[in-house]
Image (tube, rainbow, N blue to C red):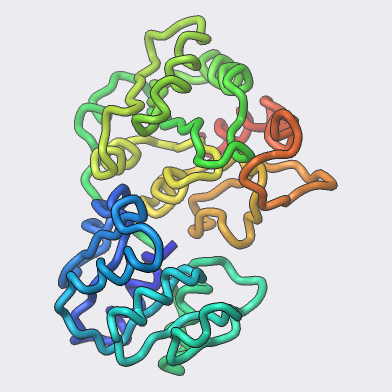
Length: 312
């Protein structure tokens, strides 16, 4: 979501030194963005509460001219305040406005990528055209060498329960695809996804063309694997955004969430599949129902047809 903003900062402030604050678990991805002067890691588990943020800020000796608060959270604005940045830029929120030197109204009906960039537009009063959300990396050689017509990455995981489709439904989709195309299916996931992906593999009838990489890659390795694939099928999650930024064709199965605000940004590489229900988009992380029917009711044949169309 922040790649476009970073590229615009480089464009507007050509000679600036750019620093970043990021969660440790995704920090390595910033190495694909470009050249940061330094990347600071902040963990809520290590630095708890407002006092934790204050103690963390005291460990940083750098003096900053401008601080952009991309997340619209109190803690993000508090970081800039404790860092004593001369200008602290962010969107208005009634509980954090006093921490910012310039608080703007958040524009409506924009993608989050554009929301971030508009912070820069409001501050510099420059036009922001041609937002570039793109990462580049060399593809994984082992995946490239696989002897099949297609290589398809599949991510069945998501942080939110409302964005996870059931294992039996995923199994049906993969079984249908195995009959239609000559492909290897590369299953991705973090260490906490190992059990869930294992259950899916055990459900499948033929495992010869299934490669289970859940818990076996870091984010840079995952990026190389996705880059080597012809297509990614994913729930609404981080790997879907990563695939889309790597210019890989990406099919996203959307449950809870507003696709106009949080879907992967590059439409030329994107296909969103969702069904409209009275309760959608609910924006909840946990579905009030036993299973998120907005995902469970998507017809498997529609998903398979979309995959075949994207590949061929």
